Picture 1 (spheres, rainbow, N blue to C red):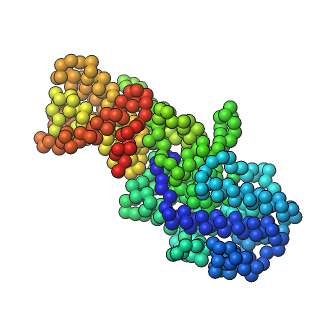
Picture 2: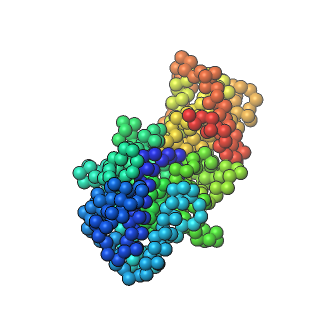
Picture 3: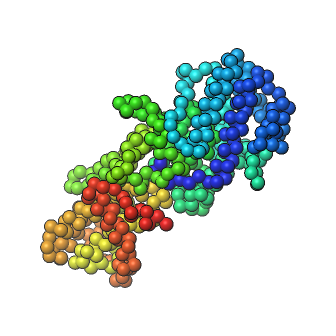
Length: 452
Ligand SMILES: [Zn+2]
């Protein structure tokens, strides 16, 4: 994930109950060849987490003969020895609880070709919970009522479905309006409506026991979910020289760590003469061993490759912003340092205020930083202030391209909107970012000190 995502306490609580219930029911079906509603309810009532609600929960299972009861019964009736079925369910339980507590080690992916018939019906049962309840994001409650309140433990149980998931996510991530995986599409508005796909980070086809897992579900844009990622598995390593499987600690763990934006820098070459802007790779912050995470992001979501394909959208925004800035601020044409300060201020606001709010803020910030570095170099090659500024303006004219008002600096407003002193800390921070690019380094204290 490019952006930070926080897991709402409500989602963690509700979906943990769902995962525990699913595993419990599979154990029950692995141990009994015939299933009976009353017996199932009685046994659930003996389980601490579901005490007092067992009858209702059993009725809920029996109320959905096709999606819930039948696959569970098929699993129970399969002639495979109980010990084998229980061993397999135990493995699923261990993996699901590991992801809840401390994600590490390997997960076993279920292969469509090699899975047994009883593993298939168990998978259908597990995935069925997701299909019935969380699939239709934003659909009316009548069609998508969610899990009933009596499924849940805790003091204030309430029903829980797709819209509850999305509303809770937005409340826990109030400044994020862009798909956290790609930084490419808006999926939410400031008015508060959020309607988007709920994506499985680890695909449910290979990890059916994680189909409703709180640490495996994240709102993503339709491009990521339906077109790019689909069922690709971050734990499958495409560089076979490194082995075919990644461990959990080798991939970005959803909700557990900050987004990759503050652990990486983006290689960008601004356009010059006839060569258009080139967006290269995401590179790890120096000293951080996150090469696998970056590879997994590229292989799963095609980031930053997708940014490179959208450079024609990313680039004009950056140039227009510089132009607007120069028009708005009363900067004298012969004050080259003031010009640079303006640019750095713009870089700083781009990076802090627009991050997660408008598409491509990360790529735009790195492009802008690279651009200012080049302009600064022009300044350093001349010694007289007036010559310096002329050279910088000429350089900018090349960057800004056709259709730009050539006199934008001369036409700037007379009010001094740009208060250098107030903007000082931001300018200094932006300069740090630019130094990172120059030194082929990384974002460091810049983001940490301005995160709030
Ligand atoms: Zn996306």
